[in-house]
Structure formats: C-alpha cells, structure tokens
Length: 74
Image (tube, rainbow, N blue to C red; front, side, top):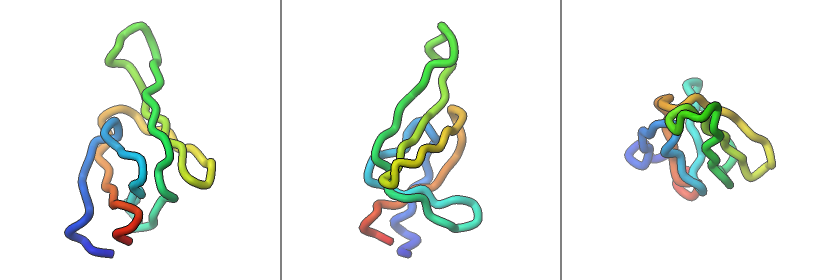
C-alpha cells in the first residue's frame, strides 16, 4: 500500500470508492454510500452511516478521525 496515497479525514468527509484503513491496519471493503443520519432536530446532531461494496454497514459518530485510501491504490 502506497502510504503517500492515504488521506486523513473526519468521518463526515468519507468518500465513495475509498477504503477505510482501521487502527489495526486492516482495510474495509470499498465504500459504496455515505449517509448522514439525523439524531434530533439539531442539524449538527448526526451520525455517519457507511455502506460498503459487500452490503455491510458501519456507523461512526460525527467528527471521528479516520484514514482512507482509493480502492485502486491498495
């Protein structure tokens, strides 16, 4: 994996076509869809729900620091 291609992002800025690099260096499947899910009437109160190419999902709180890499750069 080309370390120079890794991008640090907040959970709300994850992008389709990328893969998440977890703390243990394992990789997620490619991201298919990123959705902001409201938790209340406050527009800043939301979680980030990510759907992957294998149809699995993972939910992150807003503002979590993550690393991602384009699926073709693995």
